[in-house]
Image 1 (cartoon, rainbow, N blue to C red):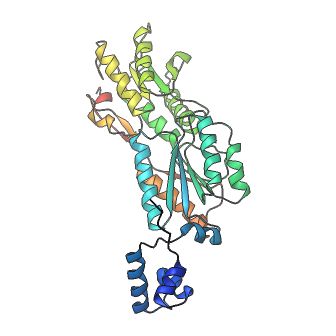
Image 2: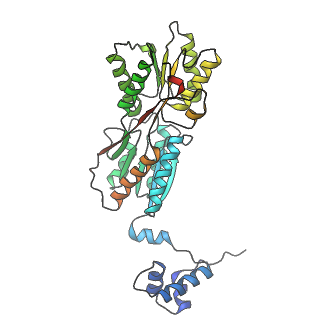
Image 3: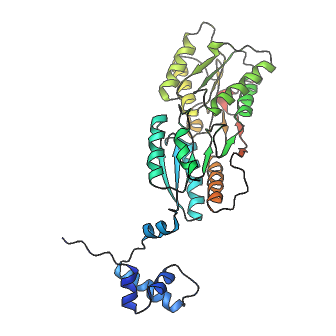
Amino acid sequence: MENKKELTIYDLAEQLNVSVATVSRALSDHPAVSRKTKRKVSELAEKVGYRKNNFASNLRSQKTYTIAVIVHELNSHFITSVLSGIEKKAAEAQYDIIIVHSSESADHEKANTKNLFHKRVDGLIVSLAYDTTDLSHYEPFLERGIPIVYFDRVKAEATGIKVVIDNFKAGYEAGVHLIGQGCKKIMQVTGNLAQNVYIDRLNGFKKALAEYDLPFTPEQLLITDLSESAGIEAARQVLEMEERPDGLFVVNDLCAAVCMQSLKDAGLRVPGDIALVGFNNDVVSRVVEPKLTTINYAGREMGELAANCLIDQLEGTSSLKPNYTIVLPSELMVRASSLRT
């Protein structure tokens, strides 16, 4: 079957007996073209199946009106909330978005950035992979003046606006809460301490213990990938300890929920024998039994803010410096998993 010829604005102009410029302006809703002419052009374009050539238009303007979003995972309520916020603001500003995920791999993140660079995206919104330490793969964007906004997982030395929460404060509040419930030996299950979110939560947690003269030993820290299997392994290690902790701060809700269920399956009472606090306020924190105490922060608001920061730079209206950091609030949400008093 022969492919149908793709019609151009030249074809529309010829059929309507008007200039190409008039057709172009009519399709762009230019005020210089009368409503009657706009209607004729629009009706003919729809009738013959004309498609606007955005590619050619973008080549002329040197813009693709496309924003790329790099996330470290997709199976997270927090990440989907952030993406929802980004999509809302991008649509309002008439930008398309390309979403890629690194699967918590720095190598995949690097491959994604290379691909996006060749797609000529106008800007990037990024949350770093679990093991990303070197940021050299973002240099080609910066060299060409392509702005980058980082959110949640960021590097202090990265060039780009950053949107985060105060993870130190959140870790501190989780520790103080568990101490307030009578916990004397509290363990933290965390992720790669090379990432800001995990080292800051740990330092805040350690400050809480120090203020109440409680010890913190190496066995009270377990560094994992915060997966489901990590939750099972964390529970196993707790059960094998001679002196078990009576409090557990797991900096990811899914990992915390799996860990809690494994402890319950082994006969421990939650929170009677061990009180638990998670992080992120994912859906799972509200459906497990007992419901999980957690740290809530607004993913959709973070996404909207990150998108606004990037679009303002693309439109030349940003008043923020390239390395400005925006800190959003978070909140300890106390539920049954940690309430001992």
